[in-house]
Image (tube, rainbow, N blue to C red; front, side, top):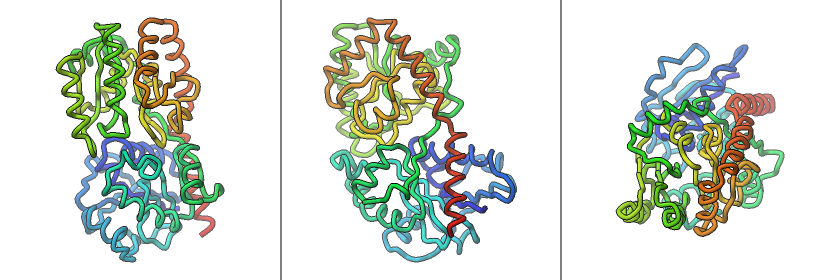
Length: 377
């Protein structure tokens, strides 16, 4: 079975879909058998650094003759029927891990991570929303199978697009083995290197409206009044519509102990998670919420929103608060400071819960979908 996967997001995006694609491909590569082969195609302006270190006769990279923007315009906006096979050769399955699939004669699989552009349009970039409103329905029509990363996303697909349940396979994201409790010595080294003051809460994710940094800032102001020794660490690059959020972070940091780390290598995240009082993740909407299980696997408690995929992924291991309720969020943060037994309990629950999310299991489930659509073609 020759499976073609769009590897462009793995190169172009550090987190989110990029991390999903990288982690999935590495897990798939370890499970290829028989005549299985992965063809990782990417745009001409996306350089898969280090690809030669792990490319094998069963894992091949194929560079398209056009840059990402031109390919997107041609395939998704102008709808030019230039089949993928014309550029990479014949394949038996095509997987689009980032909401869309190109024209192909092979059966297609598409991964839908969330429908935030429909569920919370007020938090979406207008240009991206317009693009997804056109491109996603075409991808769903073209796909022989749809992968959703949570039951919440699957339900949203049925509700908003009428996709029959039998066409959707729910495959949760995994946790990279990198995320595990580090030694106390390593935690201290990382905190010193990044100039982080303990004790602290942490929020991780792109700085954009949907992540709800504004509520975290209001909640932390309340926490600081009761516990002035506690600080807040914000990890994440500015994303779309970030200007007012960045301004609010900078204004708050002038009067509160807030450390904003816009760029942090993934290898340092387990120590940042482990050294924190808790990950605070009150997003308005997520299709999954990978930082939740990564923080749990690293030994940190989690406080997140009480709805949708966030509550689904967190299970009974996290503390839950309404997304926009700064007072409720602050109260839970204070409890984790004041009740060591509660924090220890959530750490234990979180580590047990996170163990259920593995890329090994995700890869096996993806291979089963590939085989199913290939057999039906």
